[in-house]
Image (cartoon, one colour):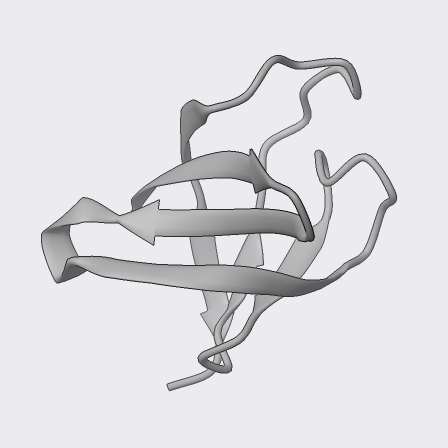
Length: 69
């Protein structure tokens, strides 16, 4: 699924346009977000693509849903 990731003052959020859903990222496998899984406030776990840690945000990427609701 396509998700937009953006930086906010207290962390990062994702936005899924097809579901009109914006949620806070509450946990990440890697400190730089990229190339591992993230957990979102609604319970989803998503896998993000490998990108450099200094990738500029906001950015739309293809994420794979691993679990959650």
